[in-house]
Image (cartoon, rainbow, N blue to C red; front, side):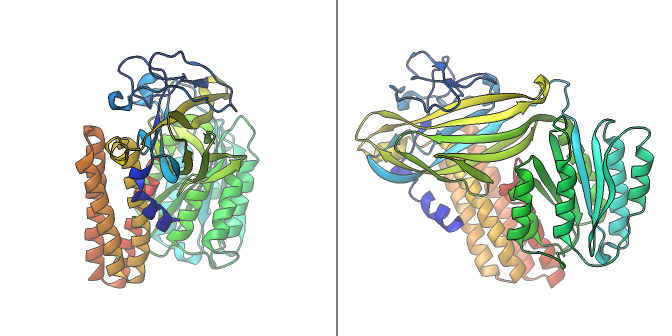
Length: 501
């Protein structure tokens, strides 16, 4: 998939599209065509009226605003909506080609006081390798985390060594139950091997028992090692995470030290739309769990997913590094819980058969979620991506969408950085350097082309981060094996693939 994406990036100038909706003067062509909770449809940006659309309808074609006059898209939050989308260019050549659709979500930071009750499962590795400071810090961090969860949240504590063990079954927190939870955490101790599969399966079962009132369901995994008992491949464990995620369970994976399997934790993060942390020191656990707690308290949406409904003549292929499922011709990107201030973006590969002329819709891109501020009321926001057909390749190249191009460059760099981290870990420093150099060059080229200061700055920052990863890879080549391994894990966890999760 990564090789395919890298090859496609070279062909962006051949085809592209942009979101186009009826909007007030000064708003961008990629602005969302409706307010939160309502799916609406833009029928053209030259003053045509915008009308309501159903959740299943694909918007009809309409005359588009002249692409040369389209302004920079306004931030979605400023329009009271969260989602935006645009193709690689405002124009497309006739015929069938593959191209990309950039999608981004900006959740408003300022939300009301309503908080979605949470069901949290602490899943702690208690194998023999966790002895000493690792276990001490795990107990202290877990207790501090539980202390700050409000009464009414559900909490359970599960451990895994040779087998999985339920230390605390799902329990509603309150003055009468907190002492028992504290005693169970204090009793955690290291012994045996590492049966991650059984531990994860039991933790997900606990999370799934949560009532519908506790729509935020999070498994917090703390581990320092690799699975040594039971099914242990990243594919199998990732599939287990996906099954839980289908019912709203997301996984925060905290890898401690240098011995955990980052490929497995990567698979858990992608499979559950969760998060990944690499800790060089066990004492960093408290800070990570503090961040997790802050995100839980800032929950702005649950059960979120992006639905990409293709227009006639369009096929949605895939979304790299995202958990997806299909419903007919539409593809859904499953996001789960989202929090205030979160920025999330993705790159969608599509195949388009463009007619010989005219303005056409590419896809309806819809954000579905449940709103904790409105009693978990289901809500929908929509944006329509469009393109204009031209026979002039120069026009396609001249009207590339900067935001989508930057998203593509950053995502490509992130995937290359994951590959480079594996190569550093295996000692293939030449291959790691080549991948990172190509990623940095791609980002710097995008920064040079960008006219928007915002997109230019983003590309420059991403390029600087890749340059830092290159420096890390070069240092690892001269480092002893233990230090090399830590550098590889740091590169893996710093990949832009995890940004915004």
